[in-house]
Every structure is written in C-alpha cells, then in structure tokens.
Image (cartoon, rainbow, N blue to C red; front, side, top):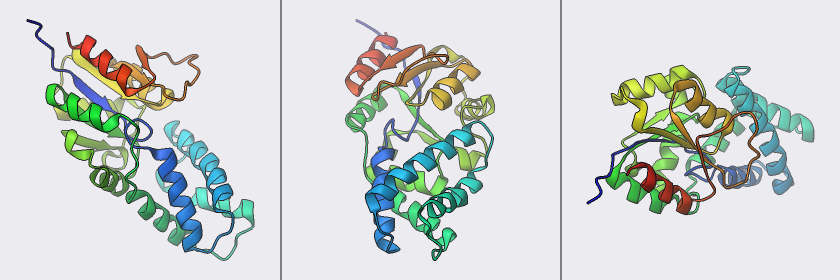
Length: 234
C-alpha cells in the first residue's frame, strides 16, 4: 500500500484558476457599453497593456494598488482623448463587472475538487479583496480552498517574503518540506516562493520563456499538474 503525503498547496488565482484575461476583456467591453465608449475590442486590448504594466510595477513596489485604480483609466482615456467620463465611477463599474465573472481556467475545477480531498489548498492572490471573493464565490471555486489570502486584505503582496511568512504563520506551517506554491507568474508566484524557501510549480500554459527566475517544476496544463502532485505526494 502506498501512503500519500498531505501537501500544503498555495495556489494563485488569476490566470491559474480564474481566467483573468478573458474576464478583463469581458469587463472592459461591458464597460464601454455602459459608458457609451466606442471601440470596445480595441479599448480592451489597450487596457490590457496598461493594466499589466501597472500590476508589474505594483509587484516591484513602484506603485500602490490605489494608484492603479485611478491611473490605468486616466492613461486609457488620455490615449483615446476621452474627457467626459468620471474616472472613479468608471473604475468602480469595472471592478463590479470583474466581480461578476465566472470564467475559470480549463481543468481548474476538476483539479481543485480532487486535490482538496487529499491536500490542504489555500488561495494566494495579489487581487482586490471584494472582487476576488466575489469571483471565487460566483465561479464556485472558493469552496475548495481552506482560506483565501488576498494582498489588499493583508496589506502585503507577492512576491514579498513577508506575504508568504504571514500566510504560513496563519496556517501554522513550520516545516516547508511539503509546501508548494502553484502559479502562472514568474515574478510574483515563483519569485515569491524562492524568496520564502517554498518549492515552486509554474503553471505555464502560455509557454513563457524561463530565464533568470527558475521554478522547481513546470506544467503546461492541469493534467500535468495533477500527475505532478500525485508524484510529489508519494
């Protein structure tokens, strides 16, 4: 008989289990309809570029979360010459649109359901508290996690060592031998694991090029991830 180890899995939310990219696109296109802004598809593409750059800056500690909320729409509207919209009102509407999204990554639900039977699952995300909690609830994925750790709520963010130390202390983990961080971001999830002495699994569905930041393991889909977790728990 094979006795399986019970692992502690820290799992990222956006573009690991929740489909952020398509949720973001849907939210912006809906926003354009709500505020009578032309060119929904093109606006969504431009917003994606701006938003990604600003969240990258946030991870590096160069900008605050609150600055992102305002600056991303300020830059977007400046690019399109839009001057008659209330940026704060638009930002609130965008987050509401995102919160209602039920889009998830293919294979995530089945993996979480099965993994939660044998392992301890915790969600670790740099997202916005209300938005992430509502998305987890509306998608039906929240029930598979023992707890959600959200950067806004903690006033800490990945990839900082302090974020992971706080999570591990709250969980009560002392020995990191059976702890793994699973996520799609090299700079946030993998780097955070490296900073904290946690073994890392890169969910690399987009075939990102790996250079300086190297994960312990890499998977391309949930079939590979499930197989890996089985092997690691032997």
